[in-house]
Image (cartoon, rainbow, N blue to C red; front, side):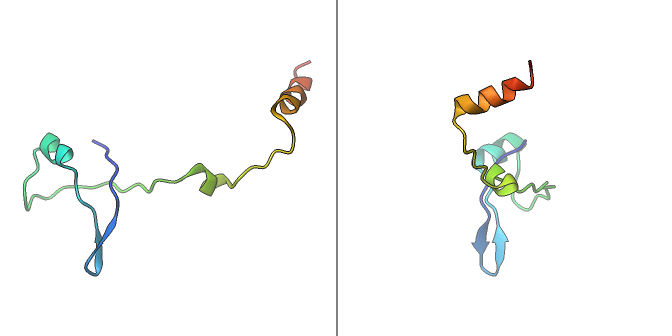
Length: 69
C-alpha cells in the first residue's frame, strides 16, 4: 500500500510517522520489522524548469497545425 508521509526531524535523526489507517490495514504492531520503499516526490517544474511561451494559445495551435497540412 502506497501512502505519502512527511519526513521530520527526530532528535539528531529524521523519521516518518505511519498513519493509523496504514497501521490498521497492515495489522502492524510495535517492534515489528517492516520493509519500506522510499520514492521522493518530484515536481514537474523542478524537473523541466518553467517553460515560457511567447505566443498566444491560438497562435501556438495555428503553428502546430501548419505541419498537418
